[in-house]
Image (cartoon, rainbow, N blue to C red; front, top):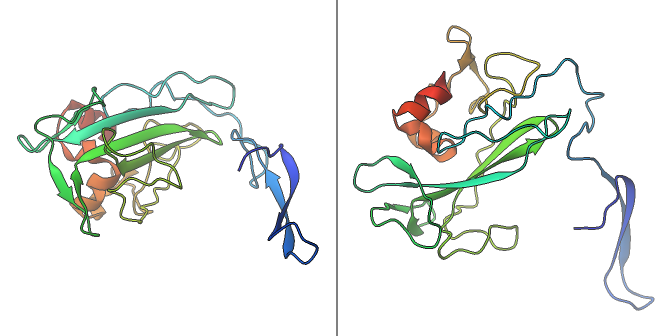
Length: 216
């Protein structure tokens, strides 16, 4: 839906243009992507760290653009190699790497093991969306054109700005299971099955320098 203005809006839907057509109205509130929504004013102080937020290829999300720690949305692709069984950045989106692995989802679809990773900011938090997506065949993901590899399930990750403390964005997304490991001073991903960790943070399944940076 487009055309909403910030604040209160009225949406009316009717079945047809005749007088007997069924219609209904709904009040909608449109909030700025910078927030806040219902939690009250933003807490202060708050430190922006989008320039330190780690992306799959080892780069960073980018500089904060305003006092609300907003950053430009960034999309990267990584693929799993059938040769060394590790994850690698996929720079050329017009053709699949020769060593790309094939994965069969729980719905029975066999697709190239290519992950589309998107990061951006909402209400001062850095969000991540990871989904199987073949950019050489699938249309751009949308609610109306989901990738063939999507199994119609979602693993929701909580923890914006949680790892390592409060009042700052953090450099990685937080808990996958809602639990913290106070001894390590970080959220413990080890409680999840390996396959679950790899779906949400596939590059963390490899013990290379980027994984070490993410985990510490």
